[in-house]
Length: 88
Image (cartoon, rainbow, N blue to C red; front, side):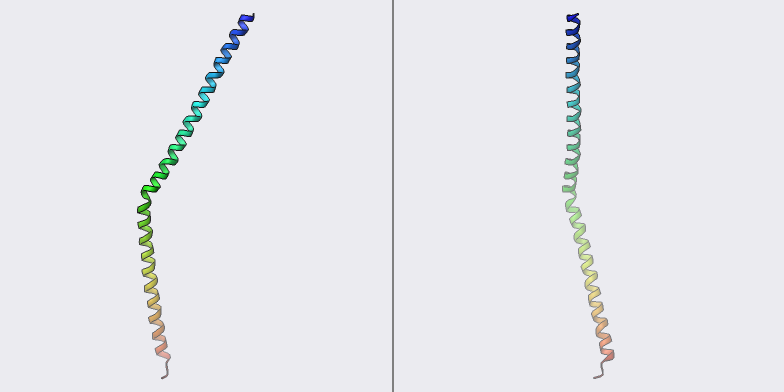
């Protein structure tokens, strides 16, 4: 009877170790996968950054050009209206 109990205990001990190792491997794989994903995202953003910056610069230039053209347009309009109403 004692031998049977020891054999069962050894089997459960080995089984417990296997389960523990399997759980550790699963966690390690998951961490590795998530790390790889975040690293890939960071690298992609770094690689694509110059393209994004160029796009932003183009947008800024367009905005500045349209703002400048709007500003000069309103100034011209205001001078026209002023000259209309001048009584000198």
